[in-house]
Length: 282
Ligand code: AMP
Image 1 (cartoon, rainbow, N blue to C red):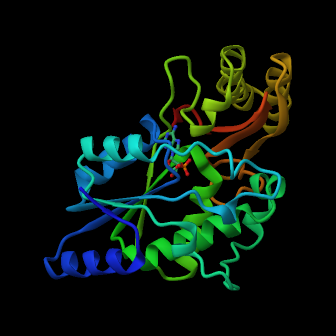
Image 2: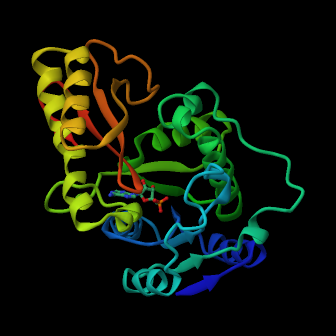
């Protein structure tokens, strides 16, 4: 596995792979790898000739009072895991390498970037779009792999890819959960044993929400999700039923996405569940 740290090295590698007509897959991550990330790498490995995994804790997507400085950084472990999964290239740039000190340009995701996660985390999706656009320009992937875990990020990235005419196919991979239902997340590392146990109520809330949605409708689903979260002492930021593409009101006959965000001790966790009329996914 090659470990490349500069844009120039990455571009040179991609140019030579393109000459060999290799299909290139990109898995963007912020490191602290877990089974969720690994599932993306495996999906990329199964459908691309060259798998590039980026590891970059992107300062632009963290608010001033968020966890940028304390976000787990485990580069040696991440590179070992990537090697085991047969990643071809790990792209691990520094902040200085990615962002000129006097950078002024950013990618505006529009209204979808300002609701729900975007409302709770102002500037977050602008930071996400800006770094993903840069990674798409540097790596020029045929396919890029994202987790349904970050459902609003998926909707924002799909929209940006379409609106800005990137030639990259967005592949969405299902949520990987622990055996007790908690969605894998690098931020689970912030939880004590007791908080970790209470955090399982995010998924419990979603399942309760699904049942309420199917029997009683959107308002009942949103109410009951909040109830379940609060019963276990979580502080919910939101619990909503939305359209999975727009994150606005769901259409009455379409797929509904249930989304929750809540604070548990020092961590802020998100989760979601897609509900079609009878079948759940993700
Ligand atoms: P992050 O390092 O948290 O930015 O995540 C990198 C990628 O992994 C994103 O596309 C996430 O949606 C995805 N991811 C994170 N957790 C999971 C999970 N539990 N299941 C599936 N994908 C995930």
